Amino acid sequence: MPHRIPPRTGVAFELPKGALLSVIDPSGEQVADLLAFRRDDVREVLSSGRTLDYAGRIYLTTGHKLYSNRSNILLEIVHDDVGRHDFLLTPCSSDTFRIIYGDDDPHHGCFGNLASALAPYGVTPDDIPVAFNCFMNVPIDPVTGALRVDPPLSVAGDRIVFRAEDDLVIGLTACSAPQSNNGSFKPIDYEIACL
Amino acid sequence: MPHRIPPRTGVAFELPKGALLSVIDPSGEQVADLLAFRRDDVREVLSSGRTLDYAGRIYLTTGHKLYSNRSNILLEIVHDDVGRHDFLLTPCSSDTFRIIYGDDDPHHGCFGNLASALAPYGVTPDDIPVAFNCFMNVPIDPVTGALRVDPPLSVAGDRIVFRAEDDLVIGLTACSAPQSNNGSFKPIDYEIACL
Image 1 (cartoon, rainbow over the protein chains, first blue to last red):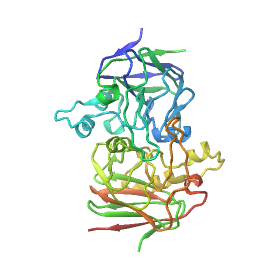
Image 2 (cartoon, helix red, strand yellow; image 1 turned 90 degrees about the vertical axis):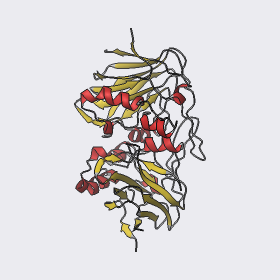
Image 3 (cartoon, rainbow over the protein chains, first blue to last red; image 1 turned 180 degrees about the horizontal axis):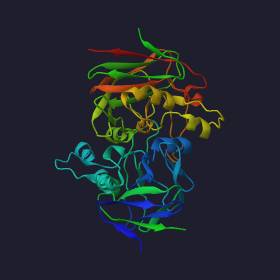
Image 4 (spheres, rainbow over the protein chains, first blue to last red; image 1 turned 180 degrees about the vertical axis):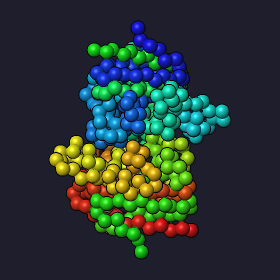
């Protein structure tokens, strides 16, 4: 049975080298922000900049490797039902809701959920980088560079599967931003298979 | 007179709140990787993810603000002769030259230059994020997300000017990667004006 992450919450857990992590969208059109840190030294963390540079593209799918800030491979995508994810934007936060949505009493967002869940592993809020945002659909205008946050292309039951290339600490959320999830908040499921 | 950064080197310096920093391409087609940290706490640093999210675009120019990982404005672009810069990719490093170029004895790159120049300010290599890559020309295919590193659009004498919105430590390079600079290594100039 998969584990369930309730709407607008997040979790952290260890993922041993070689294990497979499935991130599943049980309802469709829901984003999951994913972070990965090296378990034995959490100052080594997922790096969007290294990964996009080595992949030569901003949209990643099966076969692409997610690199750390020290240019080591942390995860490889080994299966992907959707083919559209984001690796440009940081987890939504109270500042996101204040600045983009104009909320007076903003939710703590994926950033707050990740910070709380990762604190026991020694990760501080300042250590939280751009996340790999599973199922997040961010088209780019190639002339102006303008970006939109469109509804995810995922339908109920779609999954993306990662293989751990080192012993990791993972942070994972059911995203809290209305715009990312077509206006409603839904759960995210995940499964770990140790081969 | 501007300060000159020789080819394949980098510098770090303090930039007080309100000061204007001009980054000048004296020869044309040369990239300068720029980092900014809050002087009084260098754990607060330029964030591509926050900035692109708040700007709603990946290509930034005059009027756009560069945000920190804590969602504070560190710099504002107040003048821009070129209109095409990159904020997706990390500074080139020995790993870049090993992985992308296949070099057996790789140069330390902008990453090594920034790490050395910023060390006296308490910045560690792990603290170096995606840089704002002045004049770097990275077009995106909107369907596949494939990116190219094309020659910069800058011609000799072109500049981009930033205003500091806090007391900052700046890291700045004359980029070391052949692909970014149309195959040759040239200097970068910079000027600071305190109003």
